[in-house]
Image (cartoon, helix red, strand yellow):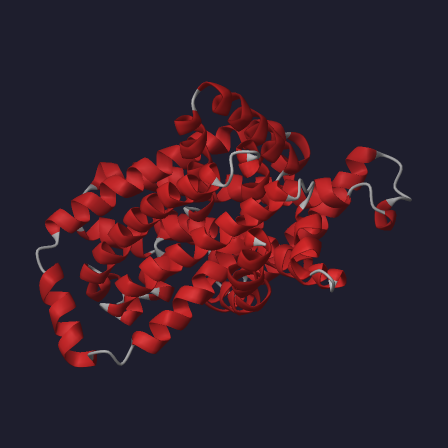
Length: 387
């Protein structure tokens, strides 16, 4: 979402492609993986909200969701490179042509989703602090909001660099937790079998809709992916296809492990509202792994805060030169004004709670994205790319 980061990633990918096409393919695949594995994924809230509740059909749903997401991104990259486009605005104008003005629909979706991501980051961090230190949730929202505001104004560059390492740290810890959790939970096959006996195929239609919805709101990462995928231009779609198949495997394995583990611990974390907000943390507590809880808790809060900072900074970068704030001459004051506006708005949304943000905020944006991103790219996009 941040244009400076995107530019650096794209340049880095281009350099790698000259020396090793395999590394370029893996690097672009990793961008989508790291973008998908954000705060909602790391907390377990996203998995519980969309897949665990579906039972065994949730596993089918997550596989379909990752397939839809990677196929959509592949067509977007192919079109972006084929027509040598320069921005996601040009991409959607090309996709919707001759109805070019419809590209505004993606702009609306994109900014709402980014705002939801900031709110989810603040809410998730506030919930984590509440569970660790028993501080008031609303007070935590104010503290996190002020911290994000301060870092956005004075330390955005440092935090953006550090967020890469924090993201890696939290993913390593989460994958370890999922692996240990699956090993310790000896009732996974029993849970799946009982669920199938109770529900049969009744949840399958909902699972298909959920797959489209989940893939839809994950399309907020599309501007970053197409910029990084520029490295494959001139390769006759080879790089786009390979990178997205690699990303499909990475995302499906990680998401699948998360859902399978949480299905086994659903009876534990679903007993309280705090558990439903942070399922992974609550599941970990039941495993009596104190040292891992500390490591996971610290990395989770840092990852959520850094997500909030980098996302807010993307808003600031986008609007600090707009006419709306043109009267503010001092660039620092201009950034403070924009950042404060976004943070206050996100803090207000965060009052709804992490689960509601992910269930309703992400959910409705997902419905919109099905109509304006996923289906158009998998139909019109495929046709235009093959034309």
